[in-house]
Length: 351
Image (cartoon, rainbow, N blue to C red):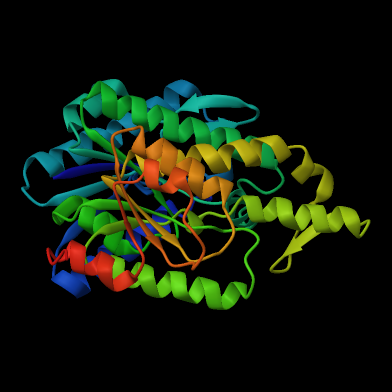
């Protein structure tokens, strides 16, 4: 099996894949061969007596970069073709460097590699920004708008490559557990999008603890995609607070971002939050809605309608005591008023 995995710089792609390899070996004794194209390019250059600095590699001529990449892919394809084992090829689909887009793959070698699956690792723009600012190569180069654009391009290009080769494509948030990728590759579990209200929640910590407990139980039956693993909208919430307090920046875990830079992408963050959640729904088999609040959530209702009208089964666990919305009834496959009823249904014990 050959997996082609992309993700922009700062996305946490390399860290996620290393965790996945280690977890798979420890949990299931499954050997995964991880090949990092970027690291191989530096190794090849060094063997040829060219010690290229990481922060300078994208300043090389396009011909030199193409030659380095071709040399690495020739080497990789030679390894992969001789082995029946699982290989994960970690690379970029594109680079956003000096305000323009650079290609990071070659169709000729991609066709020779013939991946069985395409994956893109994504993360919140704040976490990406923090990682980039901690590197010599990217420090001070990209604003939040650049990061949003680049990550969107990375997803789009990888998806097009998958469609071109008629292979499956998945977006995996960085904070998803390693079991997510493992299940996609090896398990026959159905994929579930977990929908739940995220705003205007009282006793937020206790609420999220309940969500976590439900998700853990749900994960025994399904591969669960949780939209809460990327919270770009939370950055806007902090920005609005900063505006009210007449501050010029937002500080998150000791990392400061100027308020001007955040407000520059206000509309983008709103749109991206919705589009990303819909993308996670698209790659899921069914949608499970966990609704424990007495107030109506427009976001959850929108996800229910989108899912139901796009050929997804929608199962709602609805625990508030007030009367359920007729929209919930109309756009759902089945509604359960207790968690136990839902899991009995899943176990084939429907009453």
